[in-house]
Structures are given as C-alpha cells and as structure tokens.
Image 1: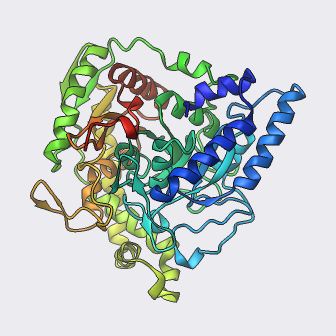
Image 2: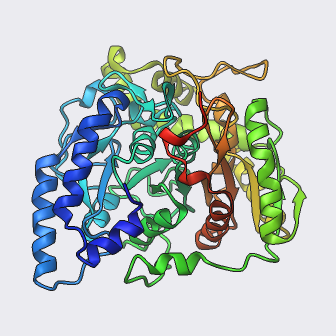
Length: 472
C-alpha cells in the first residue's frame, strides 16, 4: 500500500479510482486486522458510498480536496456522527454521537474517507491500548507486543497498511509513544494548533489533537488539513496552515537546508532507559550532526514538570470522569479509577503549586531554546512490551510505581507546551521499533517537521515494513 501523498497523486491523475483504493484497504483490514485488532468499529458501507461519490465528483471536474479519496480512521475518543464512539469504556459501548469532532469534520471536508474507528485504552488512560470493550491492540511488528497508546489502534493500523492517515490525541505521549512502538510518525502539535471541539475545558493546554502517518510528509499533509483557527475555540491559534492546494507541494515545503540548525542531544532526559533503546538511538546523534553541522549534549531543566503533570492530569480525570466513578464504580477501570481518586484528593494549594511550577518551567524552557532549535531525546524509555502486561513495572532494574512512571520521557515534554514528533529511528536486535523524539520551538511545527523529514530520508527506517523488520 502506498503512502498518502503518492496515493493522492495517483487519485488526482485518475490512475486509480477512490472505489479501487477503498476496496483494497477494506480487503486488507478483513485479511489482517483480526490478528491486530486496530480498527474496532468499521464503516465499510458508508466508505464505499463515499468513494462512489468522490469518483463522480472527479468525473464532473470538481477540484479535489487535499485528502481526496484517501482511506483514514478516527480514534475512538473522537465523536463521529452516527458512528459508535465508545471511548474504550463499557459505559459507552453502545454510544452513538450526533455530531462530529472538529478533526473528523475537517478530514471529511478535505475528501478523506473513513473506514471506521481505531482502538484506544479506556478514556485514553495510558500508553497501552487495551480495554474491556474491544480487548488489546497488537503490534504488527510482533503480535505478542503492545502497540502503545493511547492512539495505539491508529499506529497499528498505519503500520499494517490498513489506512493511509490517522488522527490521534496526546496528553502524556499518546501520539508519540504508539508511533515509536509501531515505526510510524506521530506529531504532538503546540496547544491550539489543531483546535479541539466539542469543548471540554476552554483553558486546556495539556491535551492536544494531531496527525499520524507512515512518513513525515504524510503527517505534514494531515496537519495542513487539521490546523487553523476556529471561532468556537478560545485558545485556537490564529495562524492558518500553509496554503497548500496539491499534496505534492508538502515535500517541497519540508525540503530545507538544515545547516546551522542547533540540535541539543539527550540520550535519556535523566530518566531510566532500557539499554537496547539507548543502543538503537545512539547512531541518531551522528545523523543529526551530519544534517545540521553540530550537535551538543544538553537538556533543559525539567524539574517540577513531573509534579505539575500528575496534578493537572489528576484534576482533569476527576473533573471529566468523577461522576462516572460515583455512579458506576464497578465499570471504571483501575487506571482511570486511580487518576480520578488522585484528583479528588487534590487541594487548592496543590493546584496553585502546580500552576507556579508550570510557569517556572516555561521560563526555563524558553531560556534553553533561545540557544537551541531542536532537542533530540527518546520517545519512550522502553521497547514494545508484552501485550498481556497492564503496564511496565520495571526499567533497567528500577521499579516503576504507577502506570504513568514509564511514560515520563513523553509526558515531561508535554508539560513544556512545545511541539514534539516521534520519527522512526531503528529496531532492536529482536526487530522491535524504536522512535526518536524531536522537540521544536514554541509553535514551530513546520520547522520541526523539516528536521524530522531530513532525518527520515537520511536513515530510511520508516520504509521498513513489519514483514521486512529484522528477524525476531
């Protein structure tokens, strides 16, 4: 299956029809997804109808949208009008919204055709995609391993070539962690770059929506569709996306001379990291040096980020899901329950302290990035783990006390408010993918994408499919 930009060109040149593209991807889902469990609610009939309509519009000479005829799927946390949306919770197993989330609407308006919903942990809690409604999503590179989360269904569907593009969300790493686990690309944009609607918290700067794809250019293509202001969203950034009228223009936007870009390298962010992850990532330092001219060993002072993240996350869970725990205690999972209970224990002093910690962190991060353009570091501290585990309990001999601990390399970056991307960086000796996290300046997504695009081209890791990965 071709990547999105290449396939978009074929559709525009009418070398293939939308009906052929959608039918081929449906056949692939039916053949391979029973073992993976990525696309958990399927909308094949409406997809085929949309493909017929797309082909008819082309025949009439109507200008195609940026995503014309491309097969996509939507994370099961995003509302889809008339299509089951469970949030991974048995409390919503039969829930059918009457409106589309903004990211869903924008993809449809650009001509994308949805094949269904992708799996997620309960209410997106955790970086391992398993829930009591649909079960676990398995990693296409090793079906005995986790696909990551919480956008694990999206990442696995992309890796298995079931779809071309996917949306996702990221609070503490949910776009980046599964991308790392599945050898695809996940971009956490700056808050407000991709507006979130319907609104849950008008002041939220921690949870964001963003694009996933198999290549950096395809990810940028979807960002061009998802980004841009919306008058209903108070914190939406006013800056529009680049004026792209043809998907092929995306690669030209990303093809820049990177000489002089200042890269800071941190192998571990001061956290425990599995030795095999460190070994896979080590060559990336030299690749980045070759692309930019120089790389320095440096890391921003992230003190206070851990406490602030846990406080605001707990507050969020108590606010949005506390009533569910009170009314249906037996139907709320352990991870969600734990976060709600931590939130209910918070005091005003806790929230005030977290606010001050975040402000101090922002000052230090701004000072650090005054002398640096990109920070390179691990996405995840571990390689894909056993799919039957609930979460990682130990890293390199160091016990992890909660289901959040092992995700710190992603969620500490979330607290900075900076855009961050996971790009394929290689494989362990057992054939398990490992991603490199690149962190950019405030609201600097397109500059960050250019660096990630160059790294991808220099290494070629993204082109390695599950069948071509190193022998396990």
